[in-house]
Length: 373
Image 1 (spheres, helix red, strand yellow):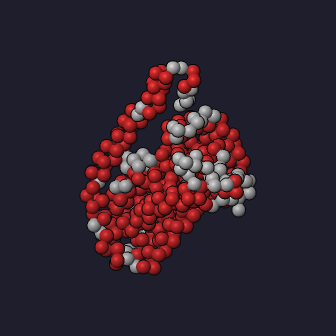
Image 2: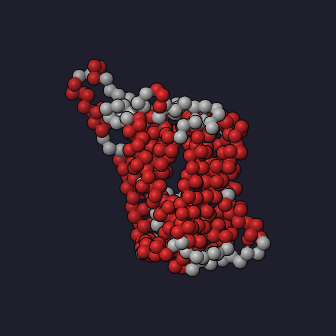
Image 3: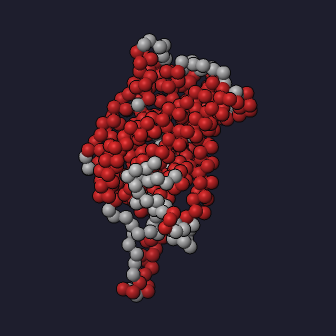
């Protein structure tokens, strides 16, 4: 919102613009309230499942330590793949701002209903503070999201050979696997459209620009993000064209290692179901988690994953314990790491009302490069 110049009007007339600047955005408040109510309703409906999952807490001591360690390492490596992918998309050699901004954005997404947009805005702002160009940040994060989402939706394709080979499968899993395949085809088509046409990307840029301007009302409003996003898309397309195999490797590695964490936690319980069926259960849960009805899929993931693992042939008690262990490592630990990353980031870049969100010196700024190491 443009600032009002008091030199051009009498003092009594200055109050209206200031009141408008400080007035609450009722539409935004209403949307947030609806999300909170919807999240509360979903969590209430899935409450018994959540209680059952967390009631298995004392049984965590029965898990085999070696497999638990393997699961933790696998999940840490999955996040490392995400950060490596972002470094390629952002065309930077820096680790610190990419890791800290990624952890904080992930934490915000996990604790706020419909927090994907807010988490992305926070991550985008932190990268900007660290010196990453605005267009580079938005374009890089968009490219990363597209690659990661496409990798997740491609999971049912990996389970298809086992299904065609005659692996027994429950009807519920069969339908969900088909849904996953359809969503992958649709998403692949959508991603192709984004990479070869401008209009849809301009709409995304306009939405991201509106979210950024709403979240950072005290800063100069952004007006040219759609055009810069087109330019960055072209640049990112060129960069990924030269390093497409690295980007694809990290995107697939992120999903594969996260799935490996679930398998490790299941092995820690002593159960060994058919991997293809577990893959369908995992992929189906991931598809359901795309619904922005609870923070980070809280309740929705626990309920769906537990039920689908049981359909995949996992004993109910082991399904509950595996889900609890997996969510502790993949959801709760990274979420708790978010505030720590935020404090460390603020300490490094001295962000705050008295420092105007500036890096401590020019040497700390993140400079784009075409050859990330």
